[in-house]
Length: 376
Picture 1 (tube, rainbow, N blue to C red):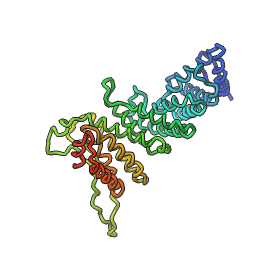
Picture 2: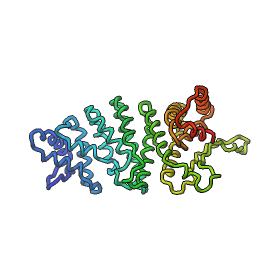
Picture 3: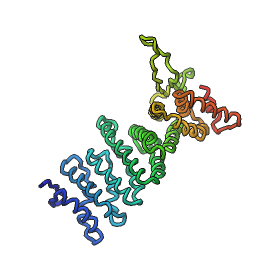
Picture 4: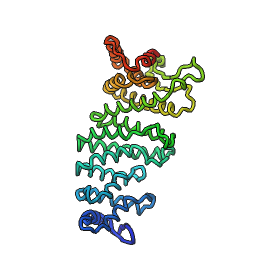
């Protein structure tokens, strides 16, 4: 077999040669011979992913590194590790994504020192690289469907292999959440990034490792919406017509229509959400988008008969954060929507909680504002 790849400077190697070459390159660092090692790092740094020969070389190198993971250490191979953890699946073809994911999992399983770095790298891949605008284009949506399932598979495997990684994962997801109020960043691009980050958070909450990370992620989702909520001033809400409502959310079941046999049809609960009278307010537009996405997640939870499980965390968050937030205007509608989806369980529990708080004379910081919201 003469399937060969060119590394650099005219050096020709077969696929099998590269497997052994990688191991030798890693070992040779200790002897002071770093030329092969530098070639390996250069392969991972190469940004031209369109050339078939370069893609093949990268793929082979990643696979070889997975087989030689026990030879990697964080003292001699710092630049290699930085290159690996700095890679973005969004810039890779599917085969390379798979090889990179395999390497990340192998690193996490081989040495506890790498677990945090592996989690960081995968969470970084919740979004495309900072400078990328691919989410604006159809190819970006296609790439998203390729990247996100792989990222979450990797997280699930690592948490399964290293159970303590779940706590670190929760912390990492919270810490790496993009902040909307950044003057140094394109607002439209940041909006796309926050929307896809929320999608990933909800995938974690509804995924295989939700037992370990679901509650903390859900609490952070509420915090995420609350930050945007309080940034919208009351003076922006009724600027045009004070007689108009500020918020449209269809929660009532439509009248059941009878079919030809006289049987009632199942009616889907609408999820229309609109922050009205805010014109081109980017903050309101983003909050609108995030809340719709969250409502759809609640509907999915209801379909899977796990809304009560999610509601416990949502209720705790409502009491701990929303009720105590001055000028919260919209975030409470998340819990109202959950109650509308399941009035017999969630609705009753919510009413009981409010009743208990009233009897105990509980007075949150934002009491007056929330009373206004509850009376809407």
